[in-house]
Length: 254
Image 1: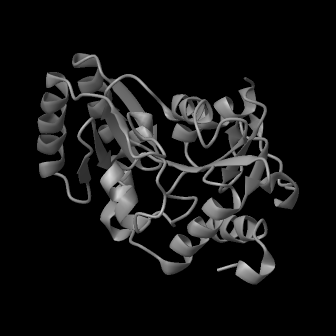
Image 2 (image 1 turned 180 degrees about the vertical axis):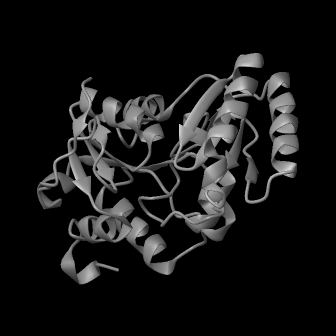
């Protein structure tokens, strides 16, 4: 798929709401990105909006995030049953059943290596996701090239996957990605027959955009213009909130 700039033209959501299956990233889409992952917490407006959307779409809404399942549930007040966490390596179906990758011995070595690397450098935040380890450098952007180089070295040494995102380098188990998560959800109830609409902001969301497009749906980039497989764009979290609310009955908007 050729990457182009996403169009700012976006039709109102009303016409697609009846048949849509919504797939939403969390950070940068439903929550503003904060310096530390733990700085993001529950917001009543967000939980209420997601609950209304679940009702409107007969359950055809899933969160597809790089965060752990526990973190998604914490931030969203356990509102959404269907969640793909750690970029799809952990997936909870609408019935509560789980499909999850298993951490390899090499990942423990990566965790130790990144922790040792971060220990002597101020501003780095290590995040252990069980089947992935992320090193955030948002508080020390000048260290980005060093962080990426060290993460790439460790991933290569232990035959794991390097995943780069906004101010973060992550080493994770190989396997499912966000696109695979979309394809898995759309093949099962309650998503089957729905038109996938994927909203994401990061490079890790490109797999989700591609999957939605291949399935006859749409990818929507959130944030500044860049080369992307998404066909439409929303400016920020507030624009996402307004766009999602527009698909709800006016008397029940949160």
